Length: 86
Length: 263
Image 1 (spheres, one colour):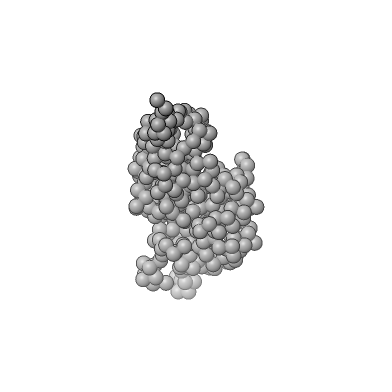
Image 2 (tube, chains in turn red, yellow):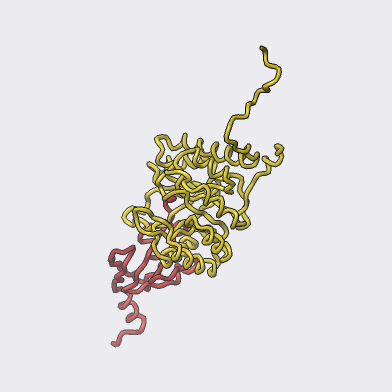
């Protein structure tokens, strides 16, 4: 019996995502139901979205688009926040 | 100068009005608790902040916002550590996303040990930021031509150094600061070099709208006490400027009458 379309997608989404995160190589297991979004990544990392800003491949990701910004292997992300400074 | 003028003494940058003429940095303190206490004691309404990578191995580490409430203080993101225009612009775009503020402090620095303002990079970054809708308070060299040019480009405040960042050498260039001020109509601040309270008072007596400092408080033996001293010095210097100092004279002029003396 040939696999249906949904099955193929499910298989492909189980692959892991290799990211450069704040300069370090990290591998994440993609979620079972689809690709990983910026929102999903921040949840996995345990970060409060209200206190950080995210840059993907040197482009700002607006906070309003975290949920719909999908990550692909090879993406480079900077996740920053405010600290003390003069 | 009567009391009412002093009571209404505020300054305005980019449409925002402030009573305190002291802007303080939030860096180099022992810990965040001391940061919060010193800033409160300083009476500052604007604080500078830096933008850095989140420590992903400790996502629950205490954050600056927990000790310095962004609802109470105006956060002024800086570009400290940026040595090119591109780095500065990228940093402030991220800061705008993190905080939602357009008002920023631009500094493009030359290499250590002086960290002197790199004016070519500063001009480039200022141009890009202003085009992108930022309101730019700019750290700069004590160069009257640069000050005028930055203002003409649209910078909302001109902030030359009194001495290198973190040096605590005081206002080494009072004459040049005064000459720059004459070129500028937007707010004019001394942004680096203050070491102790009298330095801050001197900057204010020269006529600066405000003073920005960090290390002078953070590196004092007792930062909270120095923050109080700075608050008082800024107020004293401002009052002295408004009062108008007496003329200097090369000789004595007795305060007590020389007539009616007993013989």
